[in-house]
Length: 245
Image (tube, rainbow, N blue to C red):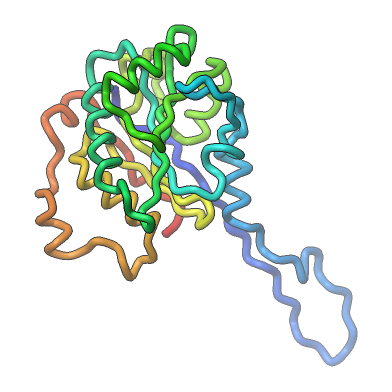
């Protein structure tokens, strides 16, 4: 894995035009009376392509319609033969899944998408999931390479150096977390301590008044990256991926 992407997910919010008051009837300016675009729809159109994928269970699904729409999700990219950071990343996300298990107000779907779709068949990914003790609610996904490449670029999980970007061994070490119906998205190193990933998810899941903050949040885990994160991820530009709170 390498440093995070330099191209953030971008949300353009347009202000509605206001017509000046006048005692005389006047022609309305172009665009007057139109409502600003829906930010959730804008994110969907620009960053959540509805590509077809296949789960580790062998089920064909659409990325947006079946996996993301109306859900809180945590998305990362991996491949089954990765021997560097992927096993540690999977273990971190397994701890996150366990932390949210059984909590109706913390329903999070995990999506791990293969960067080696030719080798990572549904059978291979099922074996990977079983080997790592994955629970229901976490999908390992494969599909067409060009469509997966399109998806990771739209999500911001790419490197500006084309040589690095083409090397799966150096893929970006991010987990992208989002609350699709609320339009809240951000990213964090997938090799961060699991509690930090949990806090990032809570910040898209909960209203700001309920965010984990203060001394309790800090003491949950001293804010420092693991040696694995420093060595394998580099400088993730996670803040670039924040869309809105």
